[in-house]
Image (cartoon, rainbow, N blue to C red):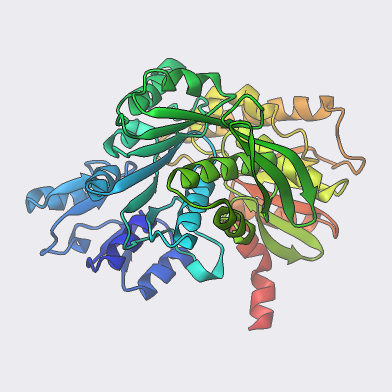
Length: 462
């Protein structure tokens, strides 16, 4: 929603909005751009001369501003309905899949912009590079429109892009999809509605993605870390500031790429962005230079600084595979240093459905600190929230004690649970030691931990 608001202000729309979150740096920055953001939801926040109300999938009909819009007969569009309308008459590029959407969308948008194609972009995270000043979206003068497409409630079916990528499919969104078959049918429908003159890029080593792409009328290409794919990354080397790898396209050498990001998952993200941009005619030299300068997006294995000799990292991971990728990357980067993972599960339904997968995904952490589940769209489930958190803690404890890959520096309590973020923060202040690595994980407000820990330093500096 933030990215969309930024794009619309670039197009000289007058935009106001509201959010339940406390004033954040992101929302304060939006105010500086001229967006009037209210905190909380009240019917009088809706301007009487409003032309259209845009709502996110998390906001239902019971919302007071939506009820007010209905009473005033103000048209209402969902986030993706408006994106679909904005995409009409343009060359749409949509990045979909369970993991890597924000990073890949950002990479694709930045490469196209560096190539002088002036794309419009809507990205689900803020860019770190100072040139973008924390932006998530912008309006370009060119015909290309790059968006991050989410499968929740089949929202991405509203987009109708000419070119698209499916980065991989894993079970998710258990509060909407009845089972994996239901989820797969959504991606299959997305693939089937691609135009015959379009292109569909799919993860070559994901059988589910490949199966969804079979019925697509568009030209299909594959990417992976395996030589059988159209786009193939190999000779991956880790260096002090990121990774370096070589790219082949249909058996021919394409380029050597240097990323200032870590992890094989980011190699895959870059490979997808390379394939998407090559299809738009961007030269390999432009792609190579743009990716070498790309600093990533917020909350994707983001280094937040140091505190009392502790390295602070933050990651958006809220799915078992993403947790495993992030912790594996942390172990590769920090070696035998003690890694503490403060994890905030996201949604009771997801946590319960993937309980065993979550329990098996923290093997590279030396200590796990569980915050209460961030319920998001789920309401009035406090008892179930506590029960599922404790069950996860019990299974994690079993897996951690069985792990043979534990660091030599062991934690006194491998798994701890906390009733609140404040309690977690107080424990961290007492227990972390110089040389530790603290990585916060989750799609809720777990990133507040770093701000609270360093607040004393900020006050002293002021």
